[in-house]
Length: 199
Ligand code: HEM
Image (cartoon, rainbow, N blue to C red; front, side, top):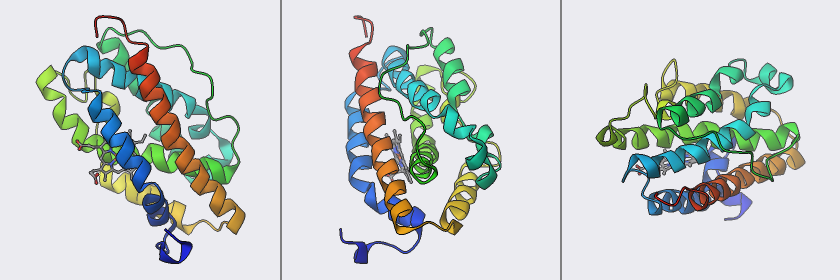
């Protein structure tokens, strides 16, 4: 895709640029059959926990918090940790290679992906009921955010789209979004590879 064909709004541009990585990740998630048993779902939650806990510093960052005032409440690391407890799964050890002190623009790309993943979560949470799980047990991190899923996303993208970025920062944000998808894919694979033998 050339720059000329890309949408004008930053959020839509990031969406278009990450369409292929999203497709690949969607397929990777489904290939691991996370809804076939609580044990397999727990591995998916391990990946979600690792991803969210790696992003905690960004969600609590003061500069980013000035841009998105509700940023700290948006982080789902704590919900994912409680989900792990519900699923009798230990909190995993950190995995080398987490994003570390990114530039503000790069961080925006990561947050875009983390926040965007709440949209897909609306579909995923429907599948957990068969395992006796819901937004209060085992799948809290996929639950509807306070104030509503669609509204939360609109608020986030409205702010993201209104920011003034230089051309160089624009590229950094795009690279951040791509890197976030790569990281989630890595954590997903790591999570299933490090599963107890019975899973
Ligand atoms: C770590 C990042 C992400 C993960 C793990 C993820 C995972 C998934 C999965 C597995 C599905 C399929 C759900 C189903 O068919 O039951 C899905 C769907 C969806 N995702 Fe994501 N996603 C991520 C990021 C994003 C981002 C950044 C956006 C938007 C900006 C997004 C928007 C959507 C939407 C709208 C759907 C609904 C169906 C579709 O249009 O494909 N996701 N996601």
